[in-house]
Image (tube, rainbow, N blue to C red):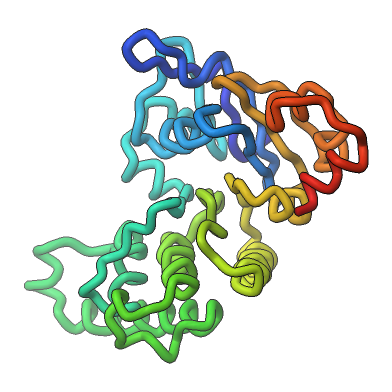
Length: 266
């Protein structure tokens, strides 16, 4: 059974279909790519899965055996879905460690009354959590910056912090929205290496949207291609490269095989 499954997923805005009857299966333990031209529905798909948008009637979204079609975002996060954003949403004046701790909030096991009546247990739990978050920062290469305000990080480090905050949610499914945007080739390679290491260490399933096609083609097991909110192709990276319907929609023209491969590999 897929970890994430959408059945007849649709979303309209003022009568305009952004997603239309989309069926997608994402297998547990896989890296699944979602590509397509601008306006093809990729971000809408992310927002539907994470509860930011509510889908049209008749749509179904299942995650890890749960029907999450109309679940609020916080419940979806608690079940094990975490995401990053193309436009980074960090708390600039908070420290790197504090930003990561924000991602952990869904796992805080106590409420307001507990802080009054069981203070010693809270202190112990907070210390354990801090140790866990520092270990995560060490893993992604940001431990030395734990006490630094997020605003002082470089662009590449901010991308890593966004990834770390998502990982602090202890996800089963990690959804990456253009993680390589604005990064140099060296930083792209570093980011992907960290994502692959996290996947192996924590048994993650990864869904990635990325305009740098080389990233998708080199890392993904399966690629789904959208155009105008509809699925126009799906398969392995090699199969997608050879799908002329995908090529025409994505590149706007028919091209010979060498030109196609040069485009998808660059």
